Amino acid sequence: MRRFYFIIAAAFRLIGCVSTHMASLHIKSPMRVVIDGQSNAMYLPKEYIMCALLLHGIAADSVINIAGSGTSLRQHMKIGDPWANTITPQPNIYAVALTDIKKAAPQLYIWWQGEFEAGYDHGSQTYASDFRNFITDLREQAGHFIVVYVKLSAQSGCTKALSEMREQQDSLMSIPNVYRVTIDDLKPPDGLHYTDAQYRIVASRIASVFASNRRRGSE
Image 1 (cartoon, rainbow, N blue to C red):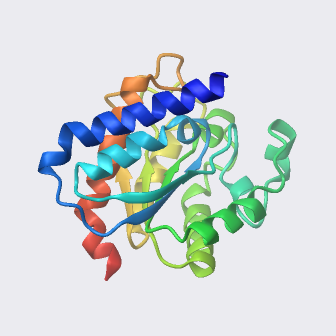
Image 2: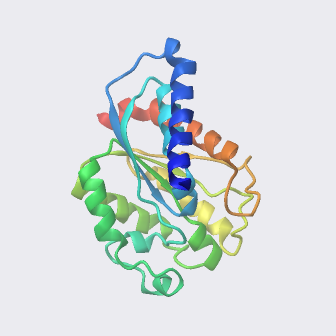
């Protein structure tokens, strides 16, 4: 029953967005989106992304969320992460996620992750090079797509290696068609996760960054 009410609430949020802004929309060709990463990505409502994209005239005909809670970057990679599996046992993320990504064939891949590395100081020193290899592999397998990632907030509670992770994440923009969203002005109430209103703000920023760089990414 709770799942039913959640679905109904999500539908009304999306319908409300469309009806509010329909008059100003000039819809471009539909597109597909994948949301991936850790728990913040998992909690980012799909309808918020769809609504935010609509405000830029972009209709997402498919948004899938394959994020998992408490995962490291390397757990998402083919090489795996045995140490992280002792903390959050998820040894088969790569194979399952790759199947979903190839099936989705996204134009936009949203990545919100890094709390694991910042909190445990595990993999933080190699994050940028690992991420480059990760995205290169996914693009070889599933085709080219634009990546928009959310940089860890300076107000994050995952402080053990936060400064190093934020520096590593800044360098991700050197990867072709990879773009950053910053949220330093948003403070997670529990030190990790955000409020519904804050997730809506993040979705808006993701859509804005994607819309402004979409043409370049398709060249």
